[in-house]
Image (cartoon, rainbow, N blue to C red; front, side):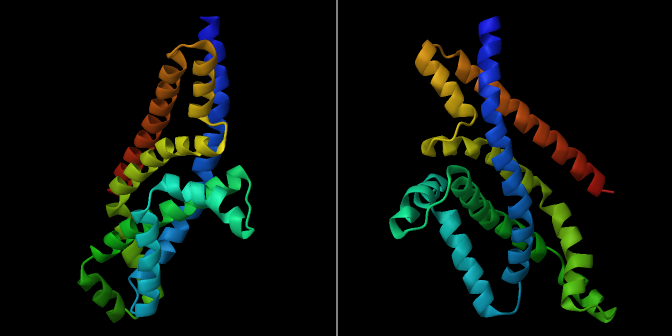
Length: 211
């Protein structure tokens, strides 16, 4: 029993890195995605196309490749980041791209009559978006955002490829040393607990915004 507790304690140390990466990604990617979705729905073609190319690149290439490029590729041209910075930048850019398309879909799902009604009331485009459209769009995109939030937890395991001591890496170290699968089971339980908490939070949020 004490051996399992020691394993769990060591694996949980990796959860600190996982949670830091998760929180930073959420803090930066959500606001950026809202702004880019707003730009993606604007009347300026150059802006729409530029954002479209960005989302196309980051949604169309593997996240693992992006991590490798950020950490191992950029130093070739003289740009070098720490492990955590490289991972954070990659995750923020990647998830911003996905969330941008989710928010764009939410914005475009709002009936055109909402825009026309806001215009009649004398609201400009910015007021219409932030007071009328975005609140309704946000309520509609909660389910897909919840899916992305869960995926993000699992994707954080990819940073093990650049040597970051997260949950999976710590579990793998014990497996290699002790020749037992127990650490993988413990890591799986930890991931399940984290994702379950996220699901509960989003269900409560969805229920609250449904009123």
